[in-house]
Image: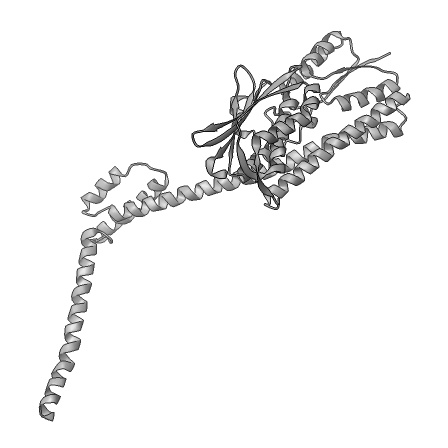
Length: 341
Length: 74
């Protein structure tokens, strides 16, 4: 090929290549725009009036959709009359809606957390102040010489001691609870036979409990669990103490059963005490929750006992629920999934 | 001797109040809850009733005792 011919072809190609590629890109663009018109990723408007219609409709849709699930039929008709499609707007609105709902949920959750934090502080203040007031009053009584006989003096000192113990108990429970909440409680799990441990605890404390009027019966199937045994002792004694605190009759009974279920093991503590109103049951494991709204008697507990139980059970991957007993009483059920073992 | 009734659910607090008042030569009775407080208050011929208003356990009794106040001096 001569130099002249080569020059000729290269000149032609220099013109042809850009022209062809520009045409291809142009066609591609037209196709994309056309399909988007057809499938409605954009709204085609013919004139100003149509555009206004579309704007009004869009605003209305967004408002209505945010107003949670009002139906869109009337607006669809409006837009259909203007030969427009609603599809994409609808999708966007629905996404928006879901987002709004999620936002709402998280706001509610935050508010709940904030409320329970405030309740916690109010609860702590109340429960610490009551025994402290007694201590102050009795110390002042001693200083003022109100206790005239040695017996009264002794009674005063005893009251001070009891109230100081109550205070100490509340504070140590609180300390333990906050450590658990912060995840700073170092549990030392090991495998142990749960049924044997329960028997041991009962054996050690049976006399004390029956003196206080709580009789304990057991029906335990053998079950080994991998957990922190001190934690477990705490669960059990907290439940016993709870039952003891709220019993109204002279003697109360508690039945403990441990048995295999279809998907794990169930440990149940059922007493014949006064029980808890149905609507209070789900809140029983909340911090400082007491089914009697009075919290009149902080001696009855720190308000943390069952919250600690729930926390400890959750750390063991178990779940805990409260149920009413018939005719009266409260049952606390702890379920462990089989894989805990 | 003047008679005073203490309606108070916290026994320790009620007792220390009693001891203070007795040291000042009052005759004192304690009612631990609203029901007994109301009946004692109505029939006991007390000169003064000390009522724990902050007790939220029985708001209705507080109102009753409060409302019945004028009847207590029988």
